[in-house]
Amino acid sequence: MFYYRIYDDHEEMSFFKSAIDEKSVREHLAVFEKEHKQYFNSDFVAFLKTKDPQAEAIEVHNITY
Image 1 (spheres, rainbow, N blue to C red):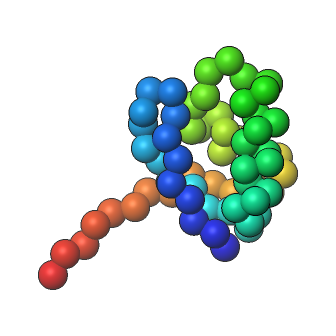
Image 2: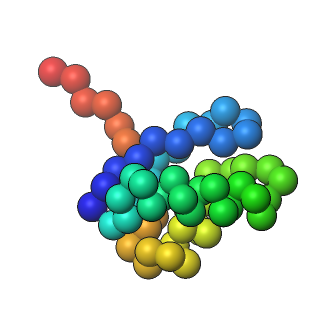
């Protein structure tokens, strides 16, 4: 599994995981951007899920000690 941090058109930061490597994710992102006028993280993760059923948005929390 690979873990990614992404920003959308509202500069919202999100994280997602996918079994697809970075190069392939970037290729899918290029296709997604051509098909959409606005870019939202949740929409991209839904699009990516059609290519990788294991893809999903995740929450990341900081733990300090």
